[in-house]
Image 1 (cartoon, rainbow, N blue to C red):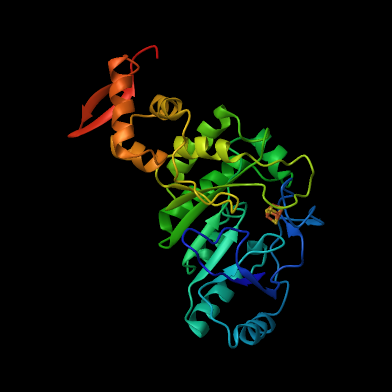
Image 2: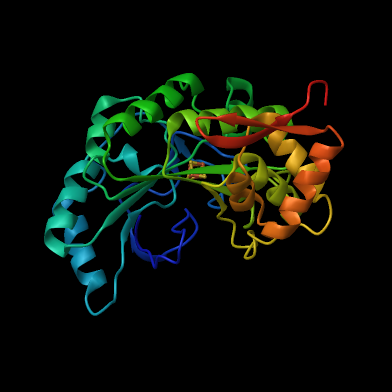
Length: 311
Ligand code: SF4
């Protein structure tokens, strides 16, 4: 599907953008069958890339659809995995040349282990890949992947793509209550996000009717806690959450301890990651130091906080 995305700040997420109604793959053709999919269950699961529609037909439809509209971005997304269309590279190049517009691709990342797919996406201005699982068993549970897909190959594909791709990458993590939101799994996801080195990380949760009723959303408080764990380059993409930079009124100290226990952080990191007001943050940190919960250490002329041993 090609969409006209109106880009508000950190979006587009896979759920934003006005659809131009132009399919580049037949609906629900995908490499995954995610439990949270807003398009229902996958009807054609495949890893085989094809030319589903003639390129000139797609381009003609785009020409008609964009006439008279104000377009900010052309986004490939939709009811399935757009990189299954093996003409996507040509389409991106043709759209950029003809319409002089930035192009975004929203992908489930599963085919990024294929060098041809990575090359196809290089001309795009923005790629929004998703990664919901850090291990194969969670991958099976949340994404109900094609039998031949291995999450470790996808992660390697994402890292390789980052190494050569010059555009922006906004990594999206879709979190489902009780499925991929355990602290242990979130810490693994955070480590992977750090290793993949996207420009941004977007946390998302189930906000539209999912393929399976048991795919439940995380609460705003859950997301806020996870946001603090992930740190300053992370945002909440879920439209249910508008004020994600606001501080928690309760549990600020616990939130800071959870962050500090995972990695040494500066006061600036905590300011950006938690949204707590500077004076309040200072007071909490002083108090934690006084009670020997955390200590200040210097590294490369910067002050970091880390837990005191055994805390
Ligand atoms: S990858 Fe996207 S389209 Fe495919 S099943 Fe998952 S959510 Fe649906």
